Figure 1 (tube, rainbow, N blue to C red):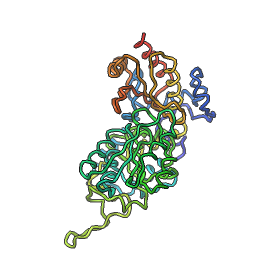
Figure 2 (figure 1 turned 45 degrees about the vertical axis):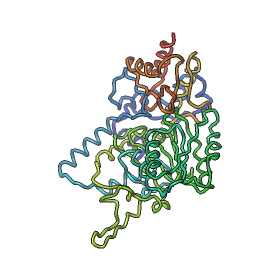
Figure 3 (figure 1 turned 60 degrees about the horizontal axis):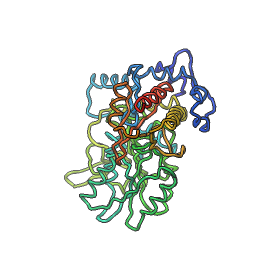
Length: 427
């Protein structure tokens, strides 16, 4: 659907406001004094986008990296689909609608990604568990990951380690030189290395790992490459196929603004028979016979799906994807990153603040993490909460920092407001 038609149909725009085509420059983004409106399209447009969310205007929600908030059209889609389902309750779900959702999820990941490589899961955590537990790893086989991963990755890895005695090898992310992470991974590779499993963007500091170079390294070494993409889809354009990624997972409830309990798993087509389904049920099969002891798995990634689904939630995710696509991912990225850079440069001007996020702009994202000397990070978060500013604490990897996420409902005034509150804590 054309962007104009979609947004008008959903009642998002008023007065014919449309995204402009103003050229965007990352050089401009690094100038903290540059007015936001000179690089972001139309302020009225972003104000109207903000109005599609129900939180009060005095509440600055800066934790999309934790969980996104639903635009009204997503809530309405879920409610409508739930109501219609109750008119004629069914334990199953509409196959055609289900396939259309997968098609849109595939489109978020890559132009070359097929819906047959997509499984709809309850969460990204479930997808991670499918990968870690389904790969044929044996005692002594090694998995490389970073120390900055979300518990959703570390805990399943440790669980497999305890059960099957695989070996986990970790590297500390290089925050000064993004490509240095490729070197750190390569130094850990040996003849027992079977899998590299890292984040697309780390939950700790918002660091973007150089996936293209890591994917190339993994392919050359004959190692599986899996990525936790919870922080990427919906925040920027991506192409997992071009990056030689074998397995990819993400949550629908963060940057894509979908409901909770919606997750997506990508399995490269030629690895479907390598990644064994662990939990299965109705929909996983392509035929079975209990008397003959026969079971044939579905020829697509549907083999990782099972049981009764809450179809309304995934139809809500579809609407969230439509909403983001209508704005266009490049515009979303430009908007979010410009706010993040304004905040990053503002932090640099405040004494006693330590920025933990990467020094190189290429490897930063729209999530920025910082610390304040001699102040407890939990107290900082509590103070911000009292001022109706929602941030996230970062205890992972012993960082004890504060993470700030910027998305389409945030604006320049919120950046300035946050910076002033940080200054007030120091004075």
